[in-house]
Image (cartoon, rainbow over all chains, first blue to last red; front, side):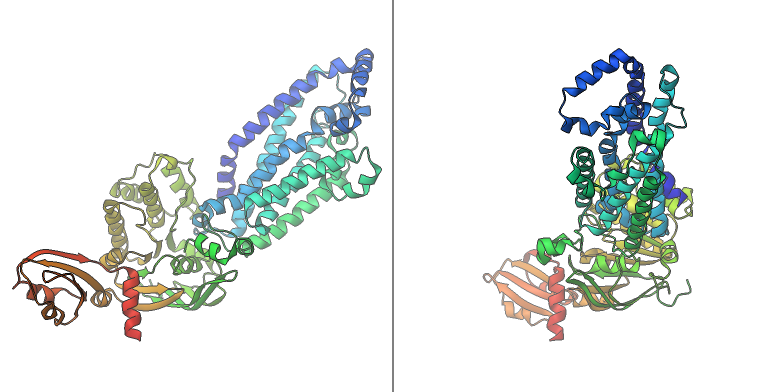
Length: 288
Length: 300
């Protein structure tokens, strides 16, 4: 398992740096601007400026009334919208974790070696989890480096809490995608479905701040349990636990399905595809 | 090698959804032999091999590889087996060496790296090259090395020479023969009769998910049909040629151009032709379908 983990993590190095460094720069730069906001005069001007924007737009940037608190500022600056950005890292990475290699035909060769499916599964999932944690640590360091230069009232350790909340959400979407890859005919379908849930969840949760009618529905979407900047002062461990709990369930079901799955060869359609494309087409898609 | 049978399948059935790929495959491959698994595309060759490695699970029947059930002992089966997939894909961004080292590490580092270098030299493969820069033939060489590098007891090769130029085909078949000489059992699928003839001890013919015939390679060659086109300088009586044992007349364009079908060896025909003035003599090897037709004709 360690071999697979190490090898998979090496494959993620580009993504870790490619996501981590820009996010760290964004965090660092954004935090430097905090002091320009805390002056009462500046606050007043900002509030005036923001009041000109439609509430439907501002809903996507967190609770604007809390914008001048450390948690509210971090929410507006980073945590309110970042799940929709980095969420796609989780979705695309987990889509290619097993199904990607399967569709490319690489898994066929790897699993012909004496490595169990369980070890391969956990080795790769572990690498994805480690890559996600590393991206978040690099981003967190962007905050930590700038923190002494600002008057933001938070410690480096407190800043970990919103990242923990973000991690639970990313893990949720990653493992959901992994599960969907085992259920749907192709990784494109799985990534698309997962992406759709992410975007729908983001919109619903944001708009639920404005509409009472949406609130009962949004509770069924994962973004409801994501706390963002609010976690800085009052981390809700129950919400964190719910997202992690669902991730564990998805991991378990996906593993169960992966162990029982026929490994496809490159270019071969999934068995569910037969209903869509017909038996004749399926025959022609099969390598042999 | 103590197992009495290297590969054993009985009534092996495999379906993909509603499509039944194998209808009850029965096979026995003996230790130390090269077994050619011959069949046209879509016959079930790849499906059979993938069942042997537990990459796909059969819907019915019995499978034993080196005396083991691949579903109960997949790791042991795979650790004693070398596999070359029909459509080989390796991570493109790696070099040949790092790809091989990774695959070797999945085997617990069993391969002797000196042997890997020797294999690479033998088939003229540069280990430092990136996989994405390799031609189809050279990628196939990577596949051959990864299948051989841990000196497996059993080699499962799915169309090992497919897409390779004749020179590399020859090198690959050489390596396969060498592996057998070192004690390995080789099970390789192909749809090319000539390469199966070249190295196999026995041949199994699969068609539509069923093994139609298992025979010594010599027997298969004897039963195989060849088509012969002959152009004579002077008019001939074609019926005289058709009377030779194993020869039948297929077509006669005129008195000087004759097409014959020959079953088995050509010797008798050649000896008769020695008394004629032959301008041109052209043989055509039968397609697999024609061999199958020959079998089915006999069955009827």
